[in-house]
Length: 145
Image (cartoon, rainbow, N blue to C red; front, side):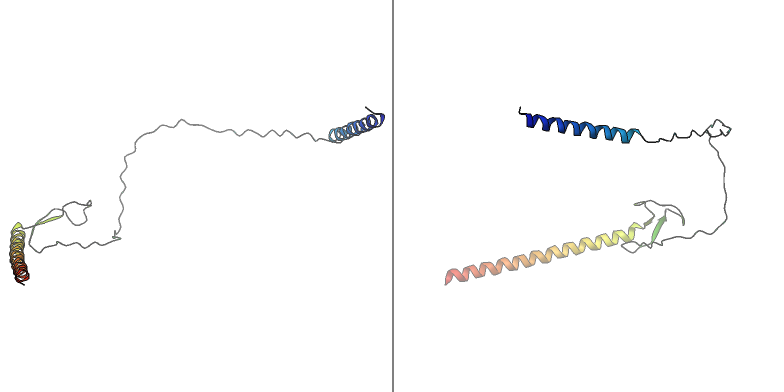
């Protein structure tokens, strides 16, 4: 190494050492206050062992109960009631049967519906025959031309 770069190196090294000593001096020369140790007075408490048990008490209240929602339901067909299976105010579940109608009225409605289906099938058959006849006549007319 040359004398000049050796001198620069030593000067730089000295600056770093002085800077390090200055930092140590600043951080080490502070007054640190010791935290006070406070001892809080102990408060005496009473403890008790807890046991679980079932308490069977009955509570009675007098009041008026009103419903939030009124639901009106009806049958899809008319008829006389045969049985009412629940009473007013009973709790019911979705899908639970509430009443039944006399089957006689339902049987009449079923027979009438079956008769309507039979008549509709006959009209459809008659219309299909007329359509087939017309198609055959049109085909014959086309062939003769």
